[in-house]
Image 1 (cartoon, rainbow, N blue to C red):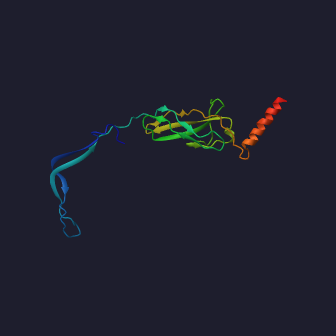
Image 2 (cartoon, rainbow, N blue to C red):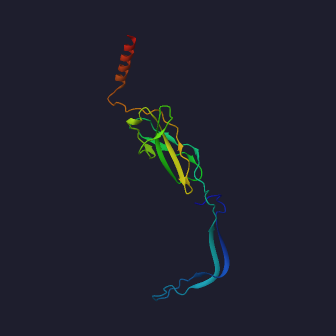
Image 3 (spheres, rainbow, N blue to C red):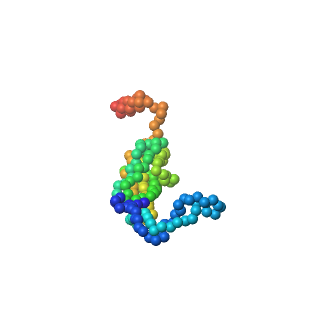
Length: 178
């Protein structure tokens, strides 16, 4: 990768040096050993060059944490979006975390090491976060956690309707009045 300002990154030189360029005049001569004729030399020389600066030999450093999109609900996909890192990361690793209801005490979820995660019944009532680690040729940066989601909800009962939910509320309210 070439970095730096674009003016002056690449250029060419032309000079005269005796015997610098070998070429042929594309003169066809029959025969199995040299079908294009004898090689001729002249004193012209051309070269191309590029200048570049090497990448910093520092590991990535986080300047903005990763984020999560999606609804924290059992069976619904959550997606991690990379944070912003310095020092040109070339790869990322992920670890999804299950936290308490306040978003603290986050622990790794076994087998949840991808950029997406589908909450399970074990996640219901917990907040979820993802830990992201960026790496480059110099090594791995310090892992950074996203902000936790809202507490994960259980699956919606597909047979339940708004009416049955309202009837249940009405029954609970009536029971409280008596």
